[in-house]
Image 1 (cartoon, rainbow, N blue to C red):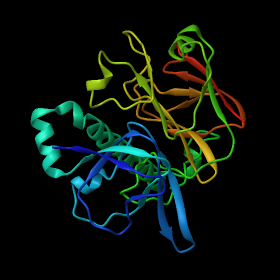
Image 2 (cartoon, one colour):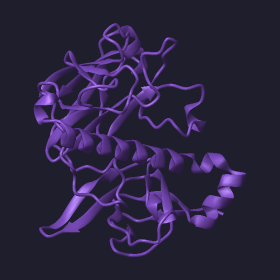
Image 3 (cartoon, rainbow, N blue to C red):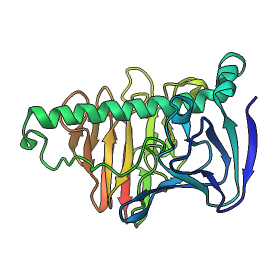
Length: 275
């Protein structure tokens, strides 16, 4: 059955171009994801507690496309294919983090396909003014979508409305892991394989917040708000994203950004500061 391993700071857990069928769930510590390019080593990002890496090895016998190394001491649960199949029958909760990672990967792949189709079928001017498509970051399949190159400066989320303040327990939140994902709180998000968020909002019918609503992403020196296919869309500085029409990502302003989750009358209003 799945076991735990401890990795020392600097120890390589997965090496690029090696073969392996093991996935890892981080219990403690951080790892760095990197890959080799023509210009040398490229840092794709860092992952921390409860995040997943190496999951594609469970599905395909292909070489690893990134190196993953411990930043500090890391405790990780290791799952090979036999472990996965056994856990699927005997301990489904153990594999829920992996299922969530798979579904998030599919959501983002689907979004990229839709964007590519939109670019081919209509001119760029058809997108709302100010909308910008996020450049693709140079990562391979084995690096999680969360892995993006670091961008200098702080990102601070705070609540404007009372429900938003309550979601943050009355405090400001420094966002230092990207993408930072926001969505609706289900009855028990810990067992909801279709829900994959860093911040859960407690909403009630008729819902403004979708189960997987929006994320804060960064890539190639820029930060973006991305609507993740929500039903009612997301307002960023009074510009509509998603909700079945228009662009689903917009570059964030330096300084203040106001985010409304759902319809214009939604009670969930946040302020996002980029310093």
